[in-house]
Length: 244
Image (tube, rainbow, N blue to C red; front, side, top):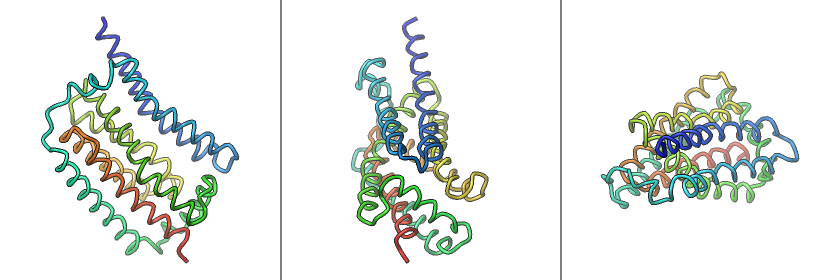
């Protein structure tokens, strides 16, 4: 009975964890966009999101040691995980920047995007180069780690307790993709081919980072890879908004 109750609690927590980021993103990116309260909505949403795993594992799942006790022995040590993560992140970043600067910079598909980005930066009080740089550092360095802790350590780590590893990785990657799709759709249109392709790319990234976490048992590699990808996105954003 205790195991059944624990499984129910875990299932409920994971459903909330998968769905909540999309709901929170819809609130601050669409429902309250341009509102004076948007920063409060964003802040509360992020605090609730990133507090959930810690509170659940600490109060319900028996602590942090038990949470990872059933994971398979790692194939990669920390050095290997970091090296693979950096190589993977650098490759994705290079591909992204090459696609943007050589193929999409002046394309019609990106025509409306700079204006949408400026609007979101206004909401975040990051519409000047220095404030944008601070935002870029926060997202690349800190937010990328928080997302890895949330999506790989907690969501994927929880799903693999009762799903096959490949299915757990897929479900966590689709959840990771969902809230990004809301953001991407705001810029390119919800039904555009580019939104579909970029959303699929996010899901593939989630699969790769789940794989690296599974093989290493550590977040270093996925985090550093995610960091480089987010840095590349911020470079693109800077060029859109601040480069004449």
